[in-house]
Image (cartoon, one colour):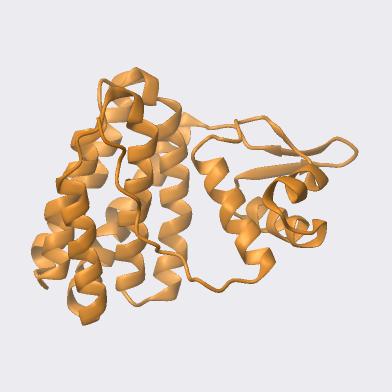
Length: 223
């Protein structure tokens, strides 16, 4: 089978070292490449990521605010555990804000952003993933959500939703092995992306809400 197509670049091309380190570590934590409870050594991470220790330390401080890492005096810094009891709280917020972001994106997205959304929709529509590629598919999920948040044109809404989507994705990744497939969860993004790109605000909001509620239902079935 052919490899999954490359993801489009959602992140800005030019970043400070601290911002780049933050984004790389954030996604490693979200995708559980750094497992819950695993210690974070700033020197080791600096070598691994190719940054100095100072930007890595700055990144770790931000990750504490995101509740992705926790530091203990004289013990060190660790990836936070994944608390399934937070699922209802996270979903409650996302059920309100995801439709708002989708609606706003449908109304405000630039012409170039609408084309980018359609390009991602087309790429997802051609996916034929195997069972072993579930984790790779979750990167498409992150890409779609971050694109829509960006297209909404509200940096405060974008920042809030990225944090909640990150927490939701960690929960999803922890139960991936218990799920028969996540391809349906990813392919339903196609209609959402098209609705946003075509400016159909009501449809976009409806699909965004369905996506969040179906996510929670799917996770609860395997807990």
